[in-house]
Length: 397
Image (cartoon, rainbow, N blue to C red):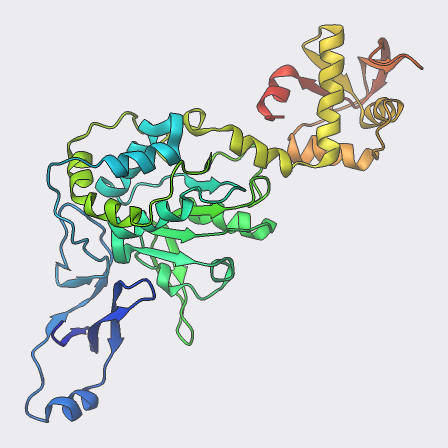
């Protein structure tokens, strides 16, 4: 690459290709002083350079422009030229990753390519087994979208210095373990954010448009990230081991990218936009997601649901009314130790229920001493809560 310089506003940058550990190169813009240029080229031989009013970030893979209305586009072009052809190995890895949701997986890839600013679910690939192809899939994404993909460690994700996120299409975290509540909140907020304040060491924070999508991988199938029951921003896929291990598989995938992109340009999406993250949540919900939600549950909540469900099924009722103390007594008679404050916390903070406004008469149930799964109706007065079958069903327990 010939030496190239640009001037953005009043600052000169040298555009270089930085070698990376995987053998690829990344384009970097390094601030360069006028005095350094004079030393390198001589006072009267400053090299020509393109001049821009400032930076912008406008992603496109099909109609890319480096200069837009006098501004330098920080989003990088991808150098693949779509060509009609076959892509059996790409089809194989996508079928392996997305399984029965293959068409949805193709929609995901197509939206990344043709609508890069569209918000998409946080894609989380989990497996406790070896040789599943998760990392191969991440590297495949990198080979498609090139400098618009950044790999992060857990520590880098948590860092306040995140200037490398600016203008990226994909933020990838391999071997993710973001098990703190603040990690989950940050991830959720970023996945739907329109703007974000990036920060580099020694520089002021700068607000930029944010359109990055998150792709995470983990060997922890149960608790890689804190995911609450009502959360609908995650698409979790459990990945099984590959049937065979080809050492040059990634190279084969890379050679087939032009044919795959041609296919994505011609293909009709199998879904329509049904929310801010495109997909209807019911289409992307999986058992792997439910397992993570279950792992993050409060144990008191799990015990409460099991008991209330037993009462409803035994007595064939659609709803159950009780005060926290009623439920504590029932659970203790059932051999489960729980405190009233734990019950209140679940009812108010996790189920978002409110008690009856005043002490009213209600019908509840009490255990029959010494006889399991036997309950008798009893009329009481108090500020009671009511749980329905529909609520229990929505809890995914």
